[in-house]
Length: 298
Ligand SMILES: NC(=O)c1ccc[n+]([C@@H]2O[C@H](COP(=O)([O-])OP(=O)(O)OC[C@H]3O[C@@H](n4cnc5c(N)ncnc54)[C@H](OP(=O)(O)O)[C@@H]3O)[C@@H](O)[C@H]2O)c1
Image (tube, rainbow, N blue to C red):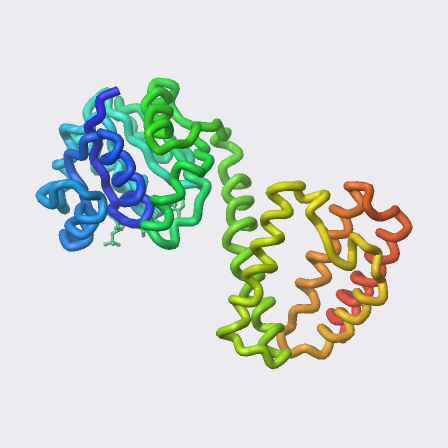
């Protein structure tokens, strides 16, 4: 594959990926941003010549591989411009990184380019930390068969392996990523607010939860979700669950419904793995559902 690439969208994902590619011998022809300062600053992070920074899409023309790392809502518009202005050559590969949109979102009526979507399953909150993790990430992709080899080479350079995701499944796939990553952050914030209600300094709340979280993730990584589950539901400790529910009823956080909702799913997990009996599962479900019902009718 021709190793000359252009990056459009020098944000967190674009800069982290471009830096790795540059280090692996890929040649950037342009780092294109909406404003010159961001593009310039991204070049410094990537380590390439700062003269490659530009706001002009035409600078992507010499590249056979054009990486579109702009926000999801901008991808189709950027691809349209690349085709309308005849910047993308007939056999260029256009590749975006969205987990929710298919490659076909870049398709244009007269376009002859090859299209691919490649989603690194990683939260890019900080580009430097993300860059350091890229080789441990799963990359899920789909698109034109003719673009597959370019995408696989790219993944290989990033240190990961390309795995296929059906374009029809991308919405569900991205909902899974959102549940596991974004909502986990929300859950930690909510647990922190309960600790705060217990009088624990909120600044300490997050740090004292961290060892708990790290050990939980380690358990899941080593034993899987079925064996990695601990706590009152999998022990069948009805007394402990009752105490939680009573405390949550009077808590100012309003977390009772969420606790019961997740509790029901936890019962399903514990029962499905054979760690609690069906009769115990039913007892716990009754306890949780009675609380949801009561809290919604009062
Ligand atoms: N963040 C994640 O955790 C994550 C994970 C996997 C995949 N992704 C995907 O990666 C893509 C990029 O996300 P991101 O988090 O890197 O976004 P980001 O940090 O907001 O970066 C987007 C970059 O694109 C630039 N931009 C916006 N419109 C542009 C245009 N029309 N032309 C040129 N540059 C433009 C922005 O410029 P300004 O700085 O001027 O706004 C910014 O530099 C998205 O498709 C996203 O779904 C994100």
